[in-house]
Amino acid sequence: MFTRIIIMKLTALTAALLLAVSPAFAGDMEISGAFLRASPKVANAGAGFLTIKNATGQDDRLIGAQADISKTVELHTHIKDGEVLRMRPVEFIAVPAGGVAELKPGADHVMFINLVKPLAEGQKVPVTLVFEKAGKKQVDMPVMAIGTMAAPAGH
Image (cartoon, rainbow, N blue to C red; front, top):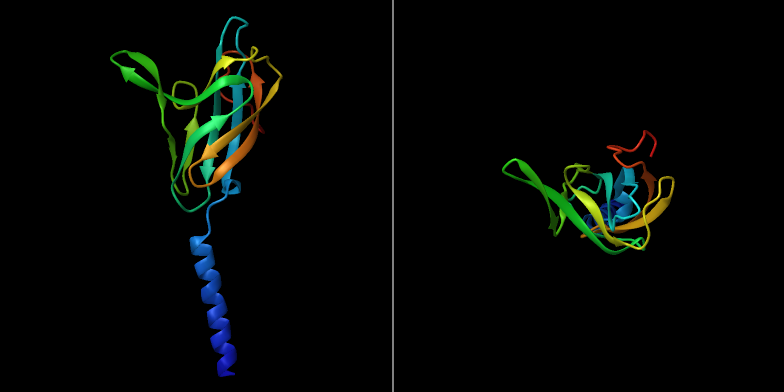
């Protein structure tokens, strides 16, 4: 009986230790509301927006994105310079443990530079988000009309 209790306690301890040191997986990052804005035919850049919910229990950072639709993909934010909002690249976007990062128009967003072709309304673009700890997560971003401020419910 005593041996059985010891084995059960050791098994529970081992399981707890394994969970504590396991890396976070992108599956613990919940992506919602993802969309791109359609671009005019003469534009060579486009912006992507989404909401990231971090269910990993540890702080993480979105450190990049990848897509075949453009030659360069960067993370950007807007900074107020006097009365003017200026867009600037950033190295990462923080996604706090148990929290949410909202990438939205006029704030943090994913910037697609030197588009291979214009972003057409109705198109779906596969984008790979890269997290510092959670790794890579692919999301299909629908292209919405120019001027769209948020994805419709259910996207």
